[in-house]
Length: 367
Ligand SMILES: Nc1ncnc2c1ncn2[C@@H]1O[C@H](COP(=O)(O)OP(=O)(O)O)[C@@H](O)[C@H]1O
Ligand SMILES: [Mg+2]
Image (cartoon, rainbow, N blue to C red; front, side, top):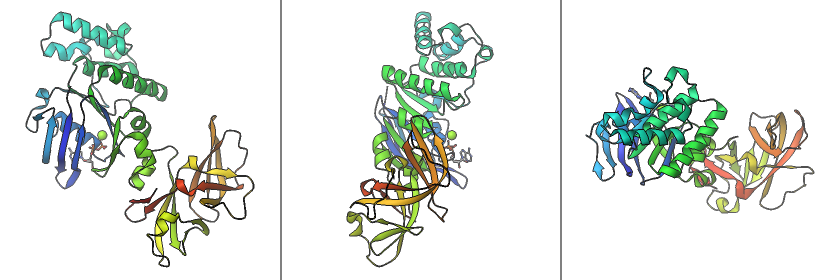
């Protein structure tokens, strides 16, 4: 096992900068998730660590060793790809033991490892089958098992669950987490799925446009996003964003207004008009049955026209817009909420839960 350290890694393809100045260190034994939209550079980072890609700039350490010039096969890392390829002519057992046989492990070690890995992934009953006799989910487990059987210093997993259907993906995700708790192998896991990132990561690295946006524990990133991109990427349904102007000590949003939090007010120019994006998580909005003339101090209210009502069992999701505007808002309501499209409702939030972003840069100014 080993830690993995990236120091200002950049990878350029002709005129495309796939990743830029990427620095972080995964401590030995931790599970880190790289997350971001398609094309943000996740696979390039993983492939650089694996040795399948050469950095244009920067240094990469695995354990104490600088591995910039160490070939992939000598790095003692195992990578599983989204489009994993099993050896079609080999049985499951032979696929699982392939890496060990290449390393000339003895027969007893091979048999023990294959048995243990197969048991941990629930594929013991499939050992004699060929890949084409397996379902997609079973094949994916074999691909994971083949990497695990090698017991590498570092695991690199690139969207390993995205070919599985929803139920199997949830199950395999939980199994992966258990497996990591048991084996404790340093793992870097790439996904564009924010739920996988939140549930699996000891820490999450959020990327966009080849650059790191934020690194932190899942709960911290969710509660304290560094910018609008991170705020809207993590969370489902995502954070609501309301374009607002600030004048005369209030935020104006499509003809309605929200008081500006006192702390923020002191740093804003009192009369000069400025534009912001306000962020509100759907779970922080509550429906007010009889709106007060004047909301309590530190509370804000908004009128919303309901567009769609989605009962989800445990709760009901309301999608609406601010009247006479294109500004959309999602609200998480109680399961027993009864309303219909076209209704006008009042929702309120505590200003403590409000986020204020710089409209131009997306940087968080208040949270
Ligand atoms: N071999 C390559 N040649 C040219 N551009 C590439 C190559 N590999 C990746 N890129 C570009 O680098 C960026 C990041 O790609 P990638 O790391 O695959 O993103 P992700 O895995 O997050 O979807 C993309 O713009 C992609 O088109
Ligand atoms: Mg990718």
